[in-house]
Image (cartoon, rainbow, N blue to C red; front, side, top):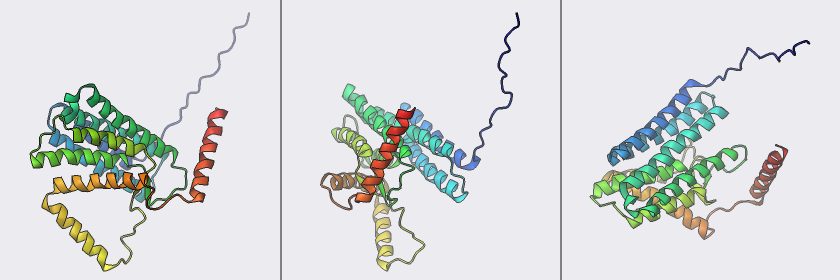
Length: 268
């Protein structure tokens, strides 16, 4: 009886090629997010807050470097989202819980879990919308790095004002608010459509200098107020239907995209 021949096992494997520099910057983003978690556990909240700020800086750099080098890739986009979840989802949630919300017990950790889960949903929604032609001048929902920036600046503001953050109902409400606005469809101005290389009215320079002067008075406090105001105004504009609305063309494009996604899921 002849033995059946086993199928040949391919000896050659596909090697994944990646762009090193942008992904190295993304790794530094994740490193500082992990750094923030460790220092939050060690009750060094100020260092944890600064680490989240550092992660946000590297998050900005990796995308700009990738575009500058013309080295954007699907791998880089997915890796960036995973790093963002660590740095701007898990790290701020752990920091908020251990710094302020732990005395609330179950409500405290559920609030921070809600924040983290909404951040993950925000990133997943952003990834599936990459192929959709949307207005680059606006974010749909509060970006997760901005939400993490609000958390980090709140730590620095409370420390500068010498306020007691333990069992703060204001911070508890802020945690839920940040989660809601991240997954909302509220439109937040991104300013990506502004080209500072172009000639602009002189008033723009005056306004810029004024904002810098205000921030320089007490950076920790004023940045927290500015970031939180940005989040609240976007929510108010969305609730009361103020500002620029979607055009019929935008809605039609989004419906077509959702229909394509459903067809893709059914096919698989």
